[in-house]
Image (tube, rainbow, N blue to C red):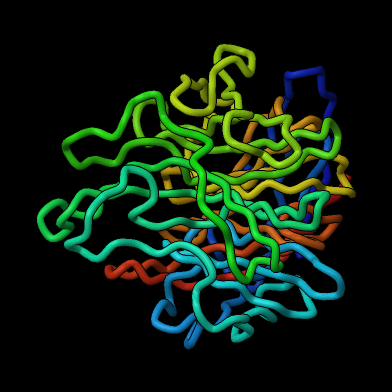
Length: 362
């Protein structure tokens, strides 16, 4: 194992990095080599890569996971996972580790989402599918499921697979086996254009901040500043109309149609599809996302709003995307957590699901 130790002195909102920058970032994947990285006041060690079998999971969609976040929560003595590629499957297992969820579909059919056929019609919100990006149990026992939504242009055979993205919420009264009507909660200030293009906002994550009892959504606009932005809701159910976007230093813009400002300093490594959890060992929120350069990056925050300078977490081949963190759940972990991500992308979009441990040190 290769591990580096450093001493840092930090001032509020400003990090100073020592001159040994060659040790700050992991090298490219090398079997048997552990990797270490430095960030403000804490460090981590990255474990060897293991590959998970996806041969029959789920039916007809094998080889496409992960396709974004994999929300996982504990209900009673069981762990419930939600896997999406425009439609969502539920798994139930006695472990939070995703390898123990493969082959554990319950039910065998999708529980939420779906899309129109190639010659379908657009409804301007979710006809292209819905991907869960955060699931939380509410005080009344229901589940709130936050999702990335897409609307497409038809027919796709002539218009391509471009998408206008947004974010919504739905609710379940049976532990996620079925879901009620979907509602849109976050939308770009620019409406869906007439000409097909990547547009809107999405590819995010939703967490509940126990420090101030608010929901936070981290998302990326598809046009303009394509770096991670955020929105907040003080409503305990995350209802429509309760969301405010971060804009010019405050949560001042409406969730539906308001403007947004990208999070600094995360703009240093722009990207999307973050995975965010509260780390009980570091007493910080940890965010991991994929950059547009195909690498995974990591940052931390004491309050879920002010983030530290991002650092390189992993470069695994030409493209490592869709990070998903699992600790005791997908939104809480301790000194050692499990990183799941997609790599080895094939021309048809299929990819390999990989896993590594991340061990933090203070």
